[in-house]
Structures are given as C-alpha cells and as structure tokens.
Amino acid sequence: MNSSRLLHYITDPRGPEEVLPALPAEELAKLLDALFQNLDTPEPEYGAQAWYEMAVEESARRSDPVGSNSSEGAAHGVA
Image 1 (cartoon, rainbow, N blue to C red):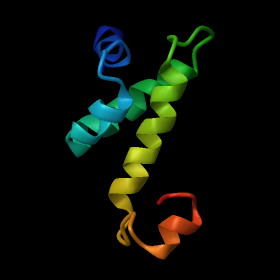
Image 2 (image 1 turned 90 degrees about the vertical axis):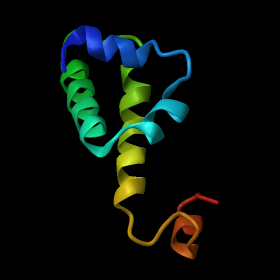
Image 3 (image 1 turned 120 degrees about the vertical axis):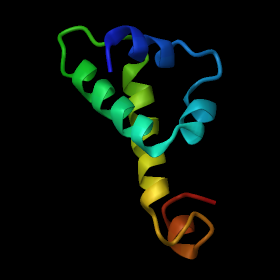
C-alpha cells in the first residue's frame, strides 16, 4: 500500500470506527501493515497511531471465535 492510499484511509471523514469493519480481510491486513510501517518512521502521519490501534482491535475481533457477546468479552471491557 502506498502512502497516498494510506492517507486516503487516515483522512476518511467517516473515521476508523466506520471504515475498518467494512474492509475485506485482505485490505485490513494491508492497511495494518502500512500503518505499522508508517509508525516505524521518524515522522508518522497524524492519526496513524489511533488507526493502527483500532485496526488491531478489528483484526482481533474478527479472529475471536467466541464472539463479543460472551462473558469472556465482557470480562475484557466489551459489553
């Protein structure tokens, strides 16, 4: 993913709460990789840290076989 594509996501007015759940798994993985690489630069893009953290959460949510409605999820602050 190039930097202009990454900026397209970071500056999306809908924000990560709306954008990330709608991404296909492959695109989410590419975005996570691009965000990680961007954060490893001397001057990461403004907002990249928040997007990265929320993308990690979205990825974990998708890979959770139990689901967010379980008591395990509630124990971790997910209601």
